[in-house]
Length: 213
Image (cartoon, rainbow, N blue to C red; front, side, top):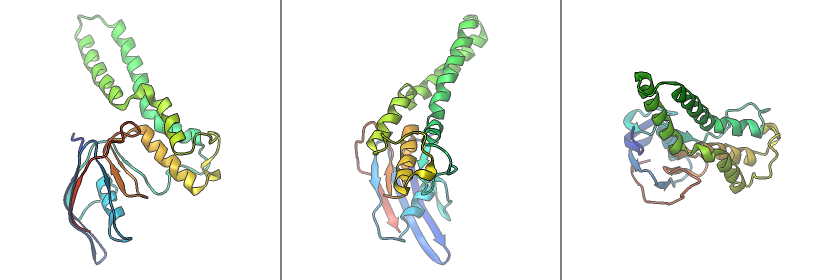
């Protein structure tokens, strides 16, 4: 699976309006791209196509498996707590750690000269590579750093989403995405495409986008 985010000759028609006409974009790992334009020119439409939330009328998108799309509204019940949102964001990392522990235990109880041991070792290696890519051992500390960086460090984790302001909910949604470390991050408010893994290196490089929108 490609780690780059690629769009080729995207066309999107809404009603009688051709919102996107032949838009192509290449966002390689490490790129940070800003989408700039007046209201209604198709920035959000392009992001929805890139994220797979919507489908183009023509053209193709090739995306990493783990694209993070920042929806304008959080997909949680209003009574969900901040802790609940963070637990959901950390679920994949904790699942990786639990699976590594399980596989490690099975390996220790399986004879090394058996075919089962070789298969388990291959499975363990693949899961370990995934865990290292996601930096799962640092996930809880990363969550604290992200929350502090977004001005939510002092927010009680028992607070419900209902009790938060719109701005706080938006920043919490962004924090949850950053904690997950998707290969590409597609916010909706500032129309920026990140294809790095924040909050590590925030190195910015130039991407290419062409077409009419």
